Image (cartoon, rainbow, N blue to C red; front, side, top):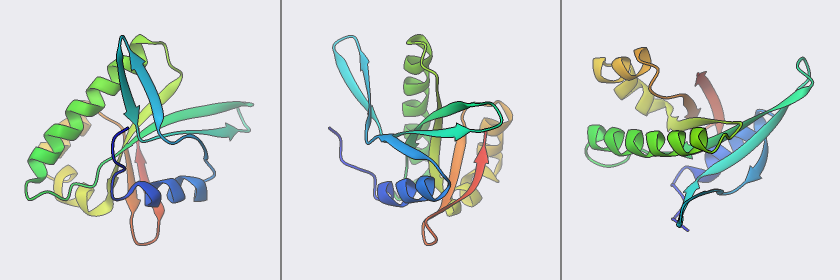
Length: 138
């Protein structure tokens, strides 16, 4: 199994504070003979719909000297997991969890705005100090 991201426990706590039940830590994907691991699987009861919403969350810290390289790597991993989940008919919605500073540094700039405009990924933005979710971008 891969090493946990530096913000793994922060995101887990933030999800739990937001009413999510962590069902998988990590969430295992099997594709052929390959095993892949998304950081977290979670579910939440939706009273209005009398059902459950299920998500999978890949956590990225964006701590390297190059935020663009971090973005390229995160986007590649997100697309791979997204496509596998879709191919397998999963009912989980995939999110990329990023720190609030990363959202400000990348996704308010043209390079990030393009990805959001094209609906390339879903973001869960968290505050690492407060261990809380700041924003969901579906």
